[in-house]
Figure 1 (cartoon, rainbow, N blue to C red):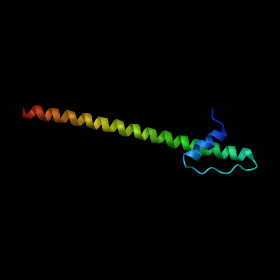
Figure 2 (cartoon, helix red, strand yellow):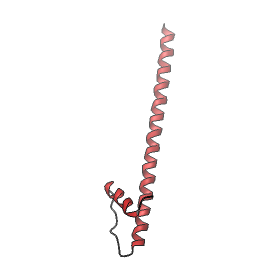
Figure 3 (cartoon, helix red, strand yellow):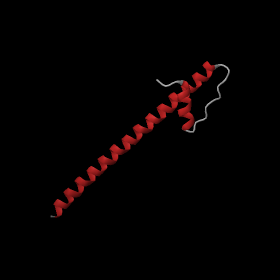
Figure 4 (cartoon, rainbow, N blue to C red):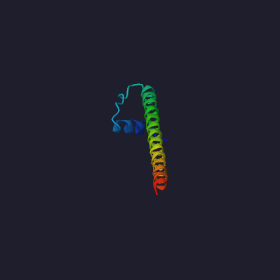
Amino acid sequence: MLTTAQKADILRKSGLDIPACPEAAREWTSRVDALFVDYVAARAAKSLRDAEEVRQLDLLRRMSHRSWRSAAAEFA
């Protein structure tokens, strides 16, 4: 499991603004954890969208090849 400091580092490297560590470390930990959950959820959602796009493109390609083959057979 990642530490809060590791999560903050990942978020920082991703270009997100991380709140400065306040005197109350618990508050900072909660904020960083919440930001990290949002970040991970957004990445997972993007991965799912990308995978769905690839699946749909593959389906369209296969359908296109089938229609070309049947059209070629019709004119042969």
